Image 1 (cartoon, one colour):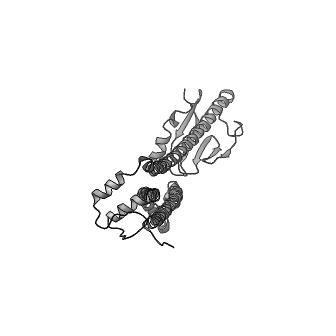
Image 2: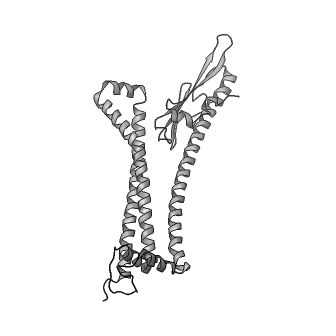
Image 3: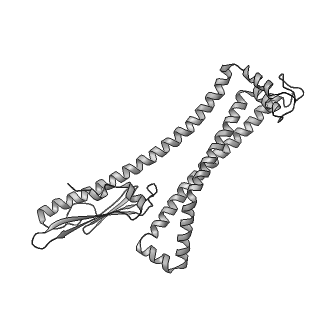
Amino acid sequence: MQGLTPVRTVRLLSSLVALVGMVFLLLERVLSAVLAMAKDGVGLGLARYNNFTGQFAAQNFAQDKQLLNLLKEVQSMLPMAESALTVLLIVAIVFIVIALVGLALPKQTVHVLVALKLLKWQTGDIEEANPGTSLQDMLKKLGEVPLKKLAIPFAAIVVVVLAVLVISSCQERAKTASISGALEEMQEQAAAYITAQKAYYAQKKNLGDAKALHMADSVSTDWFDYKMKGTRFTAVSKVPLGNCPAGSKWNVNAATKGFFEKELLFYRILPKDSACIKLTPGFKTIGRK
């Protein structure tokens, strides 16, 4: 056996670097899933303390107060965790790119490592640069490499980088589209309630409940829980909608005004969270002419 020649050494090192890159990439994917669950947990926890009973518990019970403070601390750390995920992804890409270059151009990589004094060979399978090889000689050797050989690793690098960017972009777009679709569906449900209540009032001169309006009193989807209690329509988010926490409520209350000549009124109530308000700017005008 010839043992470790310069080319074999470079290929071995490149394989190890590729393995390290894949470990970083796997770690980034795992932590990304954990971060998503952390966001959901923080959103649910903050929604729990956003209503009357939650606020009462946080003000009067030490454990609830401590838990609320912990949730706020975790929420403040989420942006840093997202930045750390980005760093992990970049490190993984860099390691994989270095490995691809080493595997595609092992001889040229040997010259680079010898010139940088990271490797030292006296004999080998190729005509190597000695420890005294200058950077100018190294660049000259690299300049003699045919363009076809250089195109392969650079094409692989471009493909890897583009694939990562496309996948991340598609995931973000799919998530945004899903949230937009869920919010549109919620507002359509609210509009359907207003339309049904208007039709019933025009006929009966009175307000109707779910049974009178021929509507389900409770409906659940992947994103919202819809309920009709009396003359109130409520939509409660089951999961975080971007920065809008889970448990946020959108209400439409029907009422009448006047004694001899009654007038039908609708009160559209948005969640208190400003992030939720930004998501549904047209909720206040649902059902208006």
